Image 1 (tube, helix red, strand yellow):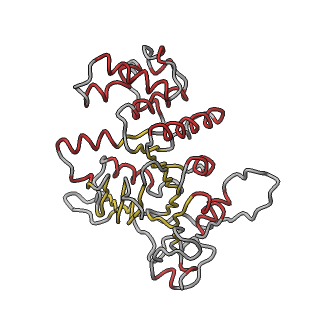
Image 2 (tube, rainbow, N blue to C red):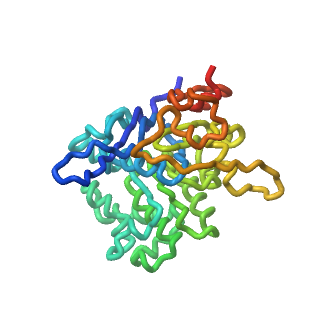
Image 3 (cartoon, rainbow, N blue to C red):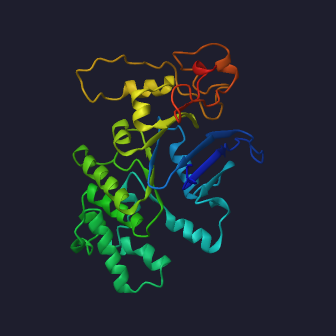
Length: 328
């Protein structure tokens, strides 16, 4: 019997109203950034959300972090609706849910020393801790992310990009969170140090048993770090499976196109490149039926235009795909 998920997202929608050009007239037009996501993250695992820019990955992260309120649907962490929490429960949620963003420079206060940046969450949320206890915890997490604690008296500008990302991770880790959202955590870094940072994330996960929700577009990073992958297109999840199952047996035409566009691990391997025609539809006026049917090279008929394909498991348990090709 599967244990209760650490993070559970059900029917999540986030629509943004478009401001009307006419004064005093309320606009009824909306951007459907996220349009009905359902997924779970178990304790100690990594789920990756992948897809093209504008598919709704970062908006999903913002809603889960509480930076945006959902238009519809729920987000539960450890069985509690995160958008209904108040008081101490909300403060506990803030400690348990942390984030590391793409650009570490924008998330670090340039006027604060590393010791202050990393220790601030403890000073604010753990007033029972003495100064010496805070200092010891800061030293511990800096060591765990691969930084020499003797450097904690320096400012962020004195570090390289990879080191600044380690500082950002330490600041997220110091509160002992249950889950960390990683929003493109290595895409702004030099290729030469990406592997080091990804290995750091895996080592931290093993030691702290923390879960990750990974937002990424680089499939190499995703394959190395994720246990499961959810492929997003136009605010919807079109395919969901364990990582190796998805890479070995992609089912949805959009997933196949994504994989064919990625650089191969072995340049000598021949492969059929899938070229998608047309532009991504606007989330203001998304297509009816399957959201991918306007670009799909395997469209099966009018049903793709009329009906949204409900997720099914046509080939393997737990491998979900929303596509009429597999309709029984």
